[in-house]
Image (cartoon, rainbow over all chains, first blue to last red; front, side, top):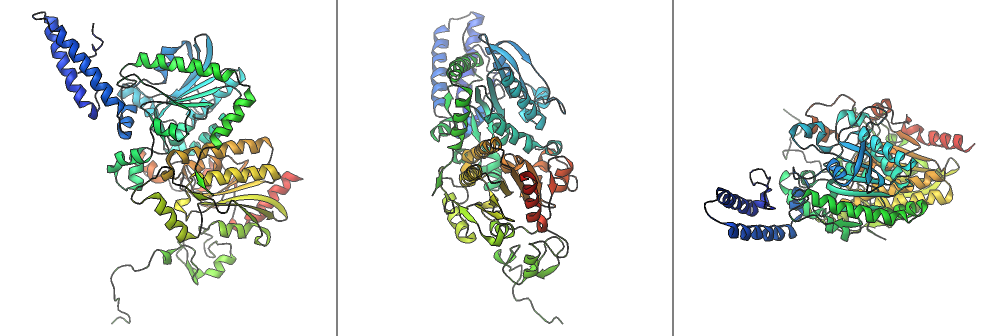
Length: 326
Length: 281
């Protein structure tokens, strides 16, 4: 069985992936011929597979800001629950903010990462149309942020490290959310995360949009997957506000310097986690394995520090961010 | 026959002449549309003498309203914004900054100072909406952080007066991280048990609300101020429905349970002094 058994008709291609899409279609035709057994085209298949890999590598090494934004939103990208279930055993999801309701856009719970109990918290998007609505497209309300904080404090109480997965187009801008204090919930999370006595690792696994992202994004280490973005606003909204038109999203994506490389170069994150060729969605299992190894090594490192030292360096790190003239 | 003839068509009033609190003789209230002498408005603490509308004012006016004899020590007065991302939208950020500094006479969207309020020292950080919509970039974040350090060192209460459209897009993720920086410093201030009052004025939205503005030991607001996370236009576009009357007004935010009280600007100084006195004695 070929590693390219994923059929092109079922795969979702982004606009800039057109060249690969065509190669996949060709490959499929060859595979059909091979299966019918009339003639042996295995040599051509192998050559084409090699070509696809080369093309993909080429395409994915030079992605623009906007293209990375597109990859970060790919409908087949793995989300929090996938990663937790793939990396861990014994995942026990915990619901509710103990106040209003359970927010489906943020999930959390304890799981065992190679024998170590970790509190995982993350945005969750849906995997099909119905589920996307159920998850509110990964846009949490205040109760989502409050559930997250409740679980973080619980982790602190039982001395378990915290890992958050960030993937949101933003905190939900709705009437009820405002009435229940969206801003207050996010502000409180940011402040209280600084004081958590246990190690905190935050990873942008998809979209890192503004307050909705940083509301679970204060950690000893903040990493970004290679094809994700993190900024104060989405390129579309930035275009609409600053250019007063939706047509400048590509320009805005460049101007905002929202990709992982820029964020690392500007000292605003602690590291980049590489994705498999073709993006996390192309090989989710491989992505989960990379992520798992990174989490284990980082937790080992962080657990060597005392809680006070971690808190101090967490605060100092964020307080150094910013560029001014004086 | 008319006495006067319009010589040029259209509205010829320039933006400067339209300023809410002009240096001119007359002020027309944007709420009740009635006019009054500017000096009367000023004597009334920039509150409309007819309808109690709180005119939008900046740090110069607030410092004058709060500090005894307008005496204060300003902190980091010369700090200005850099342009780390070389950001350009319809205009380079750098040029926008220079033009705004020239136009407003301000260095950025906040000024910080300490001085006495009814005889007791208070550290005050006050935002200026005239400077790129009171947006928070690195300067706002850093000045607030240092003002909080000053409050911690001097054990003086901290007051932040917010008036902002949110984060400054031209500093992108740097702006976002100011939410974290200011909140971190407030966590440290809380450890010292130094009181922090957050005064939200019209408007307080976005990343400012979602960080230091909502983190007061006391969250207070001026009457009728717009306070929210998302702006009303964004919410309207998202839910595709009209917003209820008074939505995101200070009065509504108080009813929702997120404000300790609403304070008329004419009583602000006395109320703050009363609060700090209660905490001290």
